[in-house]
Figure 1: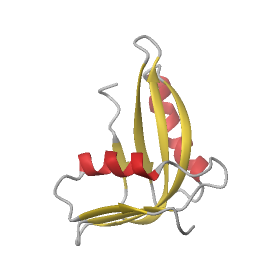
Figure 2: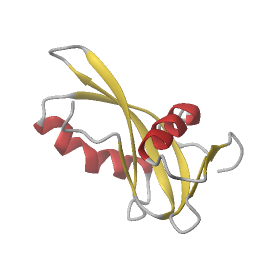
Figure 3: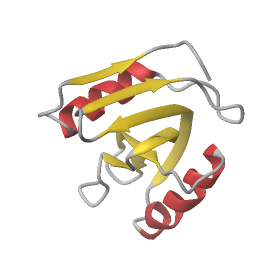
Figure 4: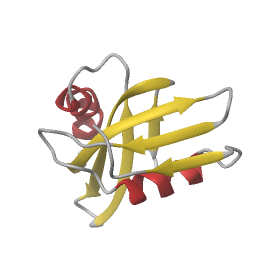
Amino acid sequence: MDDVSDVDIDVGRFKYVLIAVTDPKTRVTKHIVRGYIRCHFHGDIVDEVEPQLNRLKLTYDCVGGGRIVHNVEEKTILIFGYSQGFGKADHSIASKILKEHYKDYESITWSDEGY
């Protein structure tokens, strides 16, 4: 599980997914946040993450998605919206993971509003 980063996101405005990753040997599960500007659909993000998880023999479940606005200069992240294919991610979980990763950020917030 240590080989899988908790966060891998771009800068700007993009779609994101929250994925529950499980090690079948230890039965330990953790959530990871992934989001890339180049991916036009939430499923495209999962498709990019899948080869690494398969190579590490980890199982996974995309538990939802949304959108992120990531501003590096202002050190802010806004999480909102939902995925039509996977449903709305629990943004509070994504926010907690991002706050752990970006400890020096001024603001990491989420909202259930918007698309």
